[in-house]
Length: 354
Ligand code: NAD
Ligand code: TYD
Image (cartoon, rainbow, N blue to C red; front, top):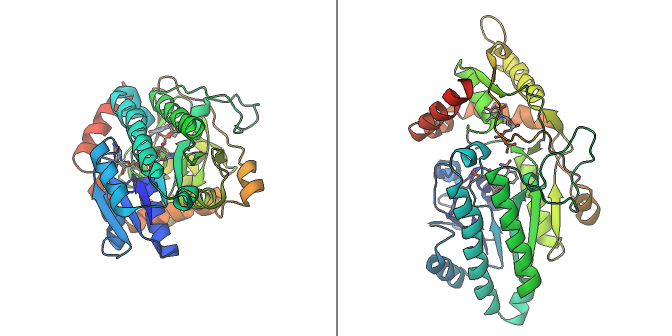
């Protein structure tokens, strides 16, 4: 079986659903259920005998040791993190705690468990650390996309905490021989994406008749990947990645934020036409994010050449699937946008519009 951390979040939940749909291997999901973790995303597998959920923190050493001993996983896939750049600007402490200290505790527990395995089991064991392209910093318009050799130049508290966790994972391989793999992926989008991030926020606000907030001039570039393509890349690296290596994951889909928002509005204009005008009329330019990275772009050729991975979706097919999912799952959106979500939106966007 495998142990997944953070499987109730956006990418983790998609990974868990895809895993259980595609193979018979049991999976344990350890998640502390922060504001970003949502068991409703996993309702369809809650009774699956191959699925086991444990609510707990990756910083809880005693729990980690017990879980590893009890379930004897052949692999750990580590998604759990604080993941939102804007929240990291308002309050970096949780990012240091979970992304750095939490990853450290997980590495130590895994090292201890791995050290007690038989030679055969230890040889087959893998820990895959899920990270981001944001560790590489920001590109200029004419720069080549990030390769795995690009220096780490993180600019936000979020990306700095992820870069630190990547360094810990690397060091645990070089020093202790822990069989680790790291993936650095570009921006994901798709079902079960919490509406604090650009794409789900814009879909949600458009349908609610609210403004679509564009930070600064909207010319920042992100390289978008449909979430199930990220999940298939993780499976490919877990299966055949070279130990201690990092693999960049991306969809060769660079878009400015304004292009993304216009694409969403155009799709919604067809799927849910307004009586008058376009959803694009709701676009509103707001104060820029402090330290806003201008451009991310991933060179995923190592993953393609070594492991034969390529994305199944283009931006056009992926965004259409995503918008249709949100249109058909408004109860999920309603559930996650109550209470604490409203507090976040009023804190973030009142400041941004001031
Ligand atoms: P998310 O914020 O949607 O989910 C994070 C999950 O981790 C939540 O379920 C949360 O409850 C859980 N969690 C947080 N702190 C925890 C702790 N201390 N112990 C146990 N569980 C905890 O994040 P996501 O977008 O699904 O991202 C998953 C991973 O992928 C992260 O490591 C992130 O850095 C990385 N990543 C994300 C993107 C993206 O575009 N979203 C791109 C590249 C890499
Ligand atoms: P986001 O989805 O938060 O991902 P990240 O910051 O990790 O790339 O933001 C994507 C881009 O969209 C980023 O350049 C910031 C911008 N953005 C807006 O313009 N308005 C918004 O309301 C949000 C949430 C993001």
